[in-house]
Each structure stands twice: as structure tokens, then as C-alpha cells.
Image (tube, rainbow over all chains, first blue to last red; front, side, top):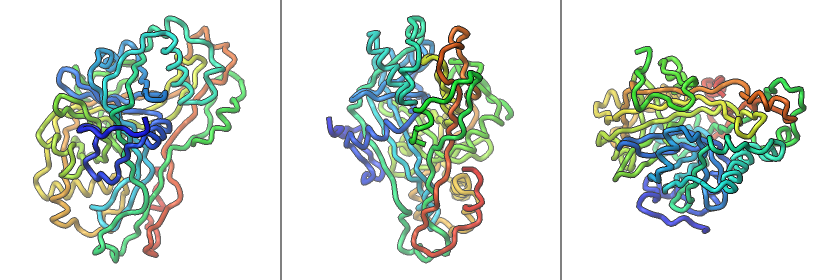
Length: 214
Length: 214
């Protein structure tokens, strides 16, 4: 599917000119993010839980302990709303009112279902690993049956979804253009620090040193 | 209040040894973050919306257009769940199962109320500005009445709240310690890039150049 259908839920209402419904934009944001915020209703009340995820085509896999509140609620087939947000910068305008942030975000609505089939579950775990650190999975031992049992993998179709993207300079009112204040963008991005090795004496692998994402 | 009461909602169930209920930890995470994810229920369905915020003592101010879906829902006094998550690193363990992330997160539960009183609203706008860019507010012109009217500020008490913190090296199973794979932490943090000035010719202010946060 190249474009997500705009529904009453997924249609962006606020600043609709920043909305994107094409799957290329949605997928690129999902593939760059590392953490999603999962919203669900339990006992009539909202919960928002940060967790890791991975995408496989039209599916978003969410990952949790089989013992967690989120996993229990989601596995029962309730509606969920998953949000992924990438912060790209602070937009410093000539008035407080026009201050903004540059960001790319995705919101997905739908019902998650637990992945029961073992081969799909192992493949989802491989995708989680490759999403976070491409190249690492093949170095790791296979998951043990007890580990598979302790891990709940939920699958959410990426159908009812929208992205919102703000980029570029501040948009000031014409009246404010002569305000005597610096205006512009302070870009922000996730960056890696120095590797902090555990006591194994093994050299850092190529995929870790070569990783150009951060 | 020094400690948030543990309630059925706010008690951390999963890996409870990583839970923190002291306000110093909760406030430090809120003060460092720039974006929160606001969860609420509308028409029985969950929504999760990223937005900016600021803290003032025991209150979290959330910020939105008066025309937004979130603002409309929240102003009616529904329950909300606000989550702030700071990603500190990728924890690369000796098994896929023990991979993790280092992070600091806060979840707040409660009911938000719109800030009606003009002086409190302007003070909240000042706090939003100072939260994002300390020192900037005094350079900016005062908000106009039409801008105040277009901005909805919601106030959420920080009472039912909890933090969750994971830090440090991977925690591997004893059996896996001889696995022939590099293990350790790849630290991640938000960092600033090169300032991208708008066409004003005004020199960047001291508070922007001196900002050591990123």
C-alpha cells in the first residue's frame, strides 16, 4: 500500500499542511526511530508506555515481557495508538507564539494481535535486533524456548496511520520581522558517545564502528 | 511533596527494581525532556499525541492550539497519561534476550484542567519558553491577546507519577558470559548541530551559544 487511508482518527486536524499519508514518509520515520509510545485503554483509563519496536512491511512489531500490563492489555485485542516522534530541532521565532519544533512523527491506530507462531516470533525478534543494531543478530546464539515463552510479540497492521513533519525556518508574522531578536533553528539529533565495553576483551565489531546512523 | 504515592495505576509492575517514586528523580527527567506523549481516551479509543510541556513545581503545563483535538478532549477534564522518555543508550548483551536500552522515563496520571486566568497563562508560556531555551523570554515581545486566546494551556498535577530508570552494563545470564560476542553499551544522547540562522543579521545570543545542555 503506497498511501494510508485518511480516517476520522488518523486524519491530522492541527496544521494539516504538515500531514503526510504516503507510506514512504511513514516507513522512513518508523525505521529511524528506536522507541515508540504505546497508548491503550484499561479499565476506562489511558496508559502510555514507551517500548521498542520493529517494522516488517505493513506490520509494526511491539515487544514486551509476557508479564507486563501492556502486553496483557494488548494481547486481549484492545485498540491501540502507537506514536513515534523524532525531534529535529528547536525553531526560535521572533515571537514566543511562533516558536516551534522541527520534528517528524507517526501515529498508528489499530488492534494488535499476539504473534503465536514460533517462526514468525523468532523472525520478529531478529527484526528487533536488526532494527536496533544491524548486523548483530548473526553473532548471537539462538533464542532459547524459555526466552521465547517469556517474550510477548504483538503485531499491529500499519494501515490507519499518518505522519506529521515540520521542517525549515521559523514562520514569523510580517509585523514581527523587525523584532530585534536572533531567529533561526537549533538542530538537534541523537548522537552516539564513546563505546562502553563490558569486561570481555573482545574487539568492537565492524557493524558497531561503521554505524553511521548517529 | 518528596515522594509520589504508589497507586494501582502508577506502580511500576515490570522490573520494579528500576522504579523510582522520589520527586527529585521525576522532576530531573521532566526538566531535561523536551517532548511528552499525551495519552487520552476519546470515543472509547486511545490517542497518543507528542507535544511540548513545562514543569512548575507540582504542575505539568501542556501546551496546544485551542483548535486541536487533544486540547478539546483534555479541557473537558478527561483522564490523561503523560509520558516523557529520555533514551540514554543501547545495551548490547551476549544474548538477544538480554538486549536492552538505557533510559529514564516518567509517567504521570491525572486529570488536566485548562488554565483560564490570564496571569497564570502568561507565566506558563514563559515557562514553556524558558524550558526550551533558558534566557530567551526576556528578549521576546509580550504575547498579544489574540495569541493568548489561540493557545490552550492545560495544567496537570504531578501527584500520581512514577519514574523508571535503567542504566549501566548488560545483565547477562551466567551461561552466556563466554559467548564470543562484544558486549557493552553504546551511549546515545540528543546533541545540537550548527545553528541555522534566519535572515536577520543579528548575532546569536549568549544564552544560545553558552547552552551546555547538548
